[in-house]
Length: 118
Image (tube, rainbow, N blue to C red):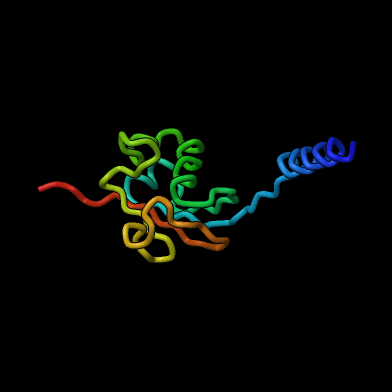
């Protein structure tokens, strides 16, 4: 009898954590340059997000600004177009952890399209 009560309590405990899980909300400033800013209509926005990394943030931004999907994303799922550069607090994400670069409250993210032509 004790064993069944203990198992029941454990599953209730797990269920409570699943229902009451706490998400960390971060406020980040996102700046857009060039073609990207004309697509959003903003040069800078502040976003309250539960995104843990750049990959999740890019997906969230593309959901909000649907027209950015073609400009920001490549054919790979949730990967940036090779002509888009992303910086977090002035550091190129390619030098940190690329799309897995962790976000912190107060981060400043910058997206810009590299120039092309001849």
